[in-house]
Image (cartoon, rainbow, N blue to C red; front, side, top):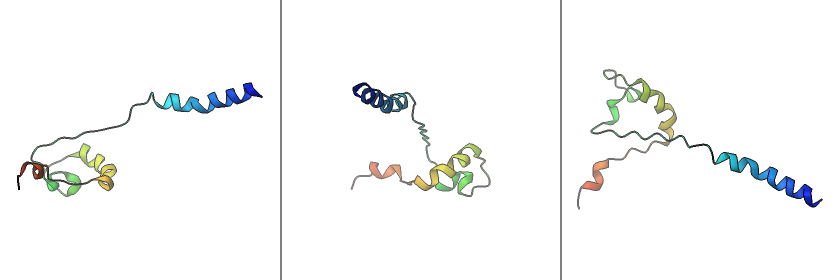
Length: 75
């Protein structure tokens, strides 16, 4: 009975050990002087941005637009 409990405990922890080996999928996009309408996903027909457009369908629900210059202005 004792051996069975030890076996079940190790069997239960095995997926946790293998899950640490995978790396998270993180993409950081840094741009300078890019406005909201400068990519095709937001309606721009002059500039073609197919890779950003494909990412937009995943990012749009989580997107929080923030002006990065806000922190540079002193009150």
